[in-house]
Each structure stands twice: as C-alpha cells, then as structure tokens.
Length: 454
Image 1: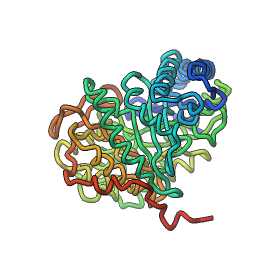
Image 2: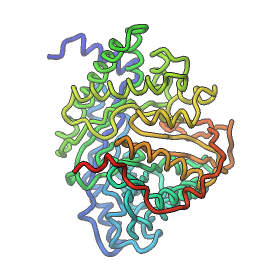
Image 3: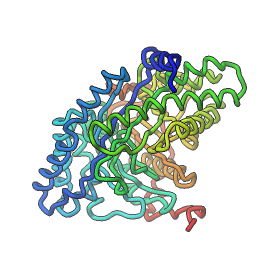
Image 4: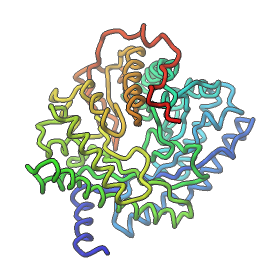
C-alpha cells in the first residue's frame, strides 16, 4: 500500500528535484508500408504514423495534468528505414523523400522527435543500407524532428570497419550541412554497438523487428532526485550508499511504471518497457556530475569517477529491476556533455577529458554522448574514436554509442550552442595523431571469443 509519506515524498521529488518522465515513445512498425514506388511508400508511412499516433501527445498531456507528473517529451520510433525503403529507394535522394515524410508526420502529430532513420550494419551493408547512410547528411539538414542511428557492430558479429570509416565521413558532412546552427545535425545522429530494439531515447530510438506492431516504451529520469537522496548518506560507507541509490531508483521506476500503464491503457497499445536512465538536462540540479560530487569527488573526471559511475549504474539497474518486470532499453546512467551542466563545468575546468569520458563509458549505459569537437577534425580521427567506443561495447557485451559533433568554424575553448534539452557544449580537444592507416584497412574486426555461446 502507498502511504501518505510516500505521496508527499514523490510530490517533493517532482516539485523540487526535477523528477520527470523524460519520454513516452510510441514504437510503430512500418513493415506493412513497404512498396516499390517511393511516392506511395511515403504516403503509406505518413498515413500509418499519423493514424496510430494521433492521440499520443494529447494523452501524454492528460496524464501529466491528472497525476502532476511532468512528461517532457512525446516521441515516435519506427522500423529502421533501410529495411522499409529497400524496394522503393534507388538513390540517396529517394531516402530523403522518406525522411521528409517522417518529418511531416512528426509535425502533424505534434511529437518532439521521430527516430528510426536507421540502418543495422553490424556485419555487412546491403545496397539499401548504403544508400540510406549516404542520405543522412541531406536528410538531417532538411528536416527538423528526424533522428538517425546506425548500428555498426555487436558482440556476436564483430565491428563493421567499412561502416565505421564511412560514418566518420558522414558525420563530417552532416556537420558541414548544418554549420550555420553549430552543426546541430550531428546532435540528431548516433552510432551504436549492440543497439537495443526497444530504446525510447533519442537520437538512437528505433522500432526493432523483434517488437509488436505498436508498443509504448517509457523513459524515466531523475538525477536531481538521486543527488538529493544521497545527501542523507553523506560520509556513509559504500554499502549504505549503494542501498540508497537502489531504493531511490526503485521509487523513480515506479513513477514511470504508472505513466507507462496509463498511456498503454488509454491508447490501447501494449506496454513494452521502462527505460530507467538517469538522463540529465541543462537545468541546474539535474546533473549526473552533481551526483559524483555528492559521492565525494571534487569534480566529475577526478580520480575515482569511473568507480563512482560503476556503482551508480549498477545500483540504478538493481533498483529498477525490483520495481518493474519489464526494464529495458539502455537503463542506467547517461553521461552526455552538452545536456549536463555539471559535466560542462567539469570540461571547462579541465577536470574531464575525452579520454576520461571514454574510460567512463566502460561502466555506464551508453557512450561518448553529445561531445563537441573542433570542426577541422579529420574524418579518419572521428572513425578512430568510433572504433574505440564500439570495441568497448563489443568486448564488454554492452551497448555503447557515439554522438560526436564536429562544430564547423569553431575550435578548442569555444562553445557550441544547441538550445533546449540539448544545451550547450565546450569544444573538447582530440588526439591529433593520425589513425587513417588503421581505419582504412576496411573489412570486419572479428567477434570476441566469448561471443560463441551456442
């Protein structure tokens, strides 16, 4: 039973500690839209999305008002478009037409973002995959709400280094096409290793082929709640600290479960998963870095940061699993730079480097996220950074991702402004030593020995 103390405690979390439901994401399969004519394909995609998602935003708003729980984003994810467009799209420009249809559907339904302009190429690329990837820079520069992702590797298949090399070039081209807005197109583009089918968070959300026709996935946040909770165990041992993190994560997840079930019931669409990811915002007090400081570190990036993140990530997952039988997606702790005020300060003060961020990704839920780098960074260097991060995911059997933003016209010490939830980011230096001879080898890095479990 829920007692009055727990009601008051949850209210306090919402009013003073930035607890929110970060997103209700409606996953929609587009496999039944496949057509040989690109115009008909676009029409079918638009009609399907606007039909299924017509009540998504209003339902989210109603739940928000009735329960007093902020729901920051309402989003849509769709079947990876490279799978849907293969029969109709003969050129990159054909795929751009599909992106424009997705963008139009997003605007009609009123959602914040639509994800799934994606290709899954962990082992090899079809012609359809290649065309979609080539279209990404134009698609992201001509749309407002479309998000794109490419899965480049997995623990089972290894790393597709041809795709890794290609994505370095694609990221640079996307940056150039959106240079007038601090290369913001790259903020809507992420590359993955071991991408999950049910991630509700952008820019990496897509509706996996293992999913039902429609599904509701909910992403919950709460760094501010976690930091406030840890104030009560300041100076305590790690066992006590771990228990506090776990119990707080349990409470946060229960809020998400409530919203997810309400949305599922009202929309008549099955509930999928809760993604309990401590996803920060640029708001003061809503920072992962602040949690590290509450744990006893002077700044994020100080010695001990990776250990602190490992504890936080693990206990968040344990608390979430206690609260819901259907925890999925990424679930854990995000460490984006631009979206976290404390992380931004750590970079500005020299406490946090790209190399330290990479080490931290070994134990967190995602990877190098929303990291701004100099606009003159070479494509091969970007590919090398991607390869390193993908290798961490492949060997450790976890999801890793890279969302790098080479900000055209800006260098180290300057700042890129993205606005809204994306915030701003100081430009971080990258290692200048050349890796092109390695990246240009091509082919596939084989899967690790522990991948063979059959």
